[in-house]
Length: 295
Image (cartoon, rainbow, N blue to C red; front, top):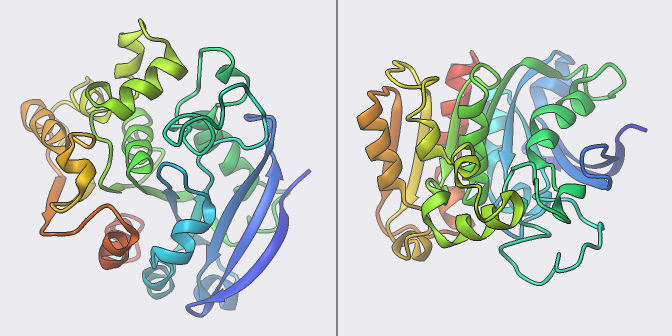
């Protein structure tokens, strides 16, 4: 079975489609929102794609309603994909006990620990299954989306997801950006809790495979001259102040690895909210648009 259209909403001259589909990765129905800009709908030509990964507790609706990514996307002729943050409906024990682990908090990894290994396969879902569902020959939206021109972005947990999926899969995405990412999860409370639960408490070497600060130091990226990375962090972000984000560790790793093309900006007074993202979403769209051949 393919995509089911739940709603169609006009937005900045284009259309936002609220969709769902049965997932083989998660064993559940997965919600996903898709924004098609006016350029796609009017000319029916394929447009590049920006995937936006959401943060803890979020659904596909949060950013599509409050992030204002459609504004910039409509100007540049860019489609936006808003996936969900975890499976929903598996009814695993403890799945809804905490806001920072389990439902709404998949951390964009493939879980190896039971019971989470049953369906918490968000790495596979985002990098393999969702593209085949959206871009495949059986998709009614495939005629609008250029599968060869895809970039990725995200916020908080989703910023972690965007950075790590980009760094783990060179060439899959044309660029990456992130708002307030959990940039060194091996060293913060959120990341330690998630990785212990999904990957195993003692499996610290496996943790490093899903940590942007560790990945940027690896052989794939050491000495890279055109990393195409943009990160924004608000100095008024309480989670930044609490040491959950650790962008300074990421910056240090970038410098030590001799990686070029990484920009980390500290935006004065901005917090962790959608006010922050809405203020800079056009710039993140433009970052993607540059490497997708639209600027």
